[in-house]
Image (tube, rainbow, N blue to C red):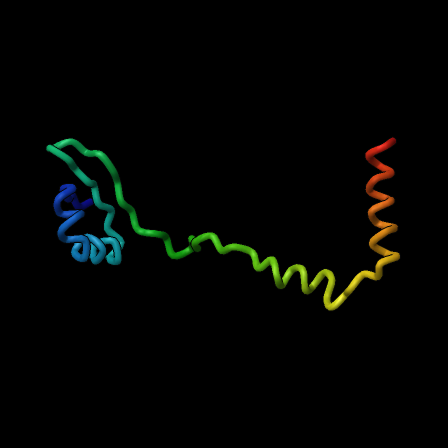
Length: 84
C-alpha cells in the first residue's frame, strides 16, 4: 500500500492515478494522520447506469395514442377508486 499526503493528492494527482491504475491502494494522510483510503475499482464493478426511460416507454406503449373515450374511461376508473 502506498501513502500520499493531501498536498500530493491535490498537486500530483496524475501520479496517484497511475498507482491506482496499477492496482495499488493509497492511504491519504493529513499532518501525519490517515484520513482516507483510495482503492482502484475492481474489474468486475461497473458504475451505475441510469435506465433508458424513453426506450422503456417505447417498448411498453410503442406509437399508441389513446382516444378521448379511452382517456375518459381511465379517469373515471381512477376516480372510482378514490371515492370508494
